[in-house]
Length: 338
Image (cartoon, rainbow, N blue to C red; front, side, top):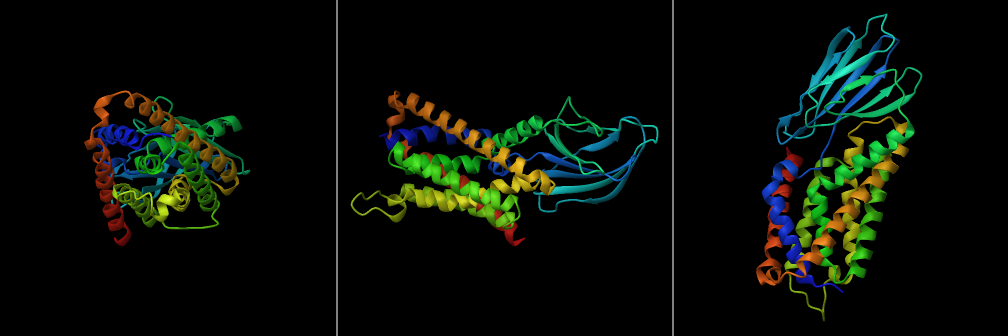
């Protein structure tokens, strides 16, 4: 059994730090890399589609350059108008006829990764991640399956660890459950649920627009905050108190749709989805375990410090959670209707 007030004290420290370090507007959504989809037309022509994330009104600027010469024609450009989502840019890349090793250099990869997928005219697909200091892509090169596995596992870990709303919900479950055994059941149901909807959505069996899903995720945090501030009547517990696994499973379905949006944003070819899906899901679970390990470690530390036993630490983190979740909910509902 663990003490509820110790977990509350732990989350107070975490949420206070998060609220100071991360702006709710900027960090409400998990980290999203830029995406470059490249399709070979013939031996010397390729079509490039750049999907550049827009975060809180800040547009990502990445431009292609042909390393060995050639011409780049801008076919179309579409910018996001609501301060979020993706900018889309389509290019026609024409390489010199004598160039047997066509290469692209992407300028502007400072603090963002570029996930590229190259499809040859014979249907071979290569997926690679570019970043600052490694910004050149050899179109005729081959990428090993192991490199693809590492890429999507890493993407899953990064997605969950930078998604403060998802982490808040997991930490809220930790507060909500009465003991570690109950929490283990709840987090298992959460994992099972988000794995189901992540798979179904990524494989295009279901489709739910992203804005209402994101609003629902914020609402799930608000619900946990509300339940945690209500008196816990052990003689007549609420439905959610009696069956926390039901809450975690229900909202886990919603969070899975949120995870899927990151994977689908890459616009991967359907033949690449199964491997990418499996690796991305493994990465999400690894990231979740990392976060829980940190929480449990800090719990052990806080349990030995008398300062964290004060009553103020039993309510402050819940209000911080509630305020941040309310901000995200209002922001996302606005996007839904506009």
